[in-house]
Image 1: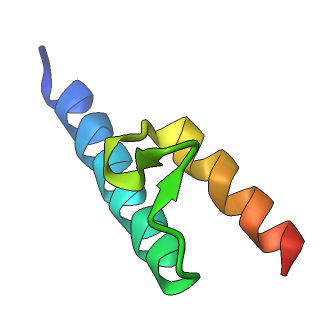
Image 2 (image 1 turned 135 degrees about the vertical axis):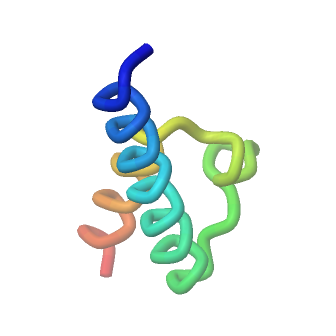
Length: 55
C-alpha cells in the first residue's frame, strides 16, 4: 500500500475520533446497544446527524 492509502486511512480515523468526541459531548455513548467506539465511520456519522436533528 502506498502513502496515499495511509493518509486516507489516517484522515478517516481522525474524523472518526472527532465524531466520537462530539457524540460524547452530547452524552451519547452507544447506539443500538453497541459502544460508539465499536462503530464504523459511516455509522458514527449517521448517529451524529440524527442527534443533531433531534436537538
